[in-house]
Image 1 (spheres, helix red, strand yellow):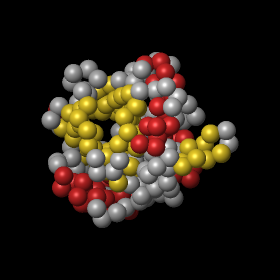
Image 2 (tube, helix red, strand yellow):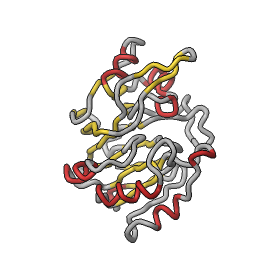
Image 3 (cartoon, helix red, strand yellow):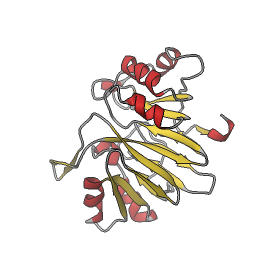
Image 4 (tube, helix red, strand yellow):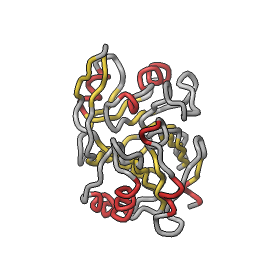
Length: 229
């Protein structure tokens, strides 16, 4: 499994069998993103919650690629009514897809989407674990620190955890460091920071605060192969 980060909470996964999965594909309007919604590949799009900076370019990408949209039931139903292929889930549930296993985990955050200038609530925010090729990543989505993160780490060994550090809307670096101690992932990658001034953070300082070699700052578009970790 190869993974890369593309600004805010957008993560791309490429499986050994050739599937491409996008998590929270916020591209248009994201000055940090290096992706092009008109050319990016996607067999599946996973959405952690409904905020516009996470749903992002889901609709044009799914229209062009035919990607299945995996999200909570409310978001899945929203897109199903538009004619997209979707799979709805809820917290605690897991499902084996042909591209890997997804388990939906809790997150403490809102989940509304702006349509024609009005915000509509679409279920609960979530995180996910994704398992394929014998490896597991955890994408926390947007969340506060909560002690049940210890159970996520106990569910199975996490190879890489993506944790928000931006503060104000999510955990800040101090709480994210506590979350890292709960999850006990082999590697911790900070996300959801520096997209705009209010969430600017020093990702290197955050990673330095973690146990030796646990923190990993990914450059935009930098790809790592979990097979060699």
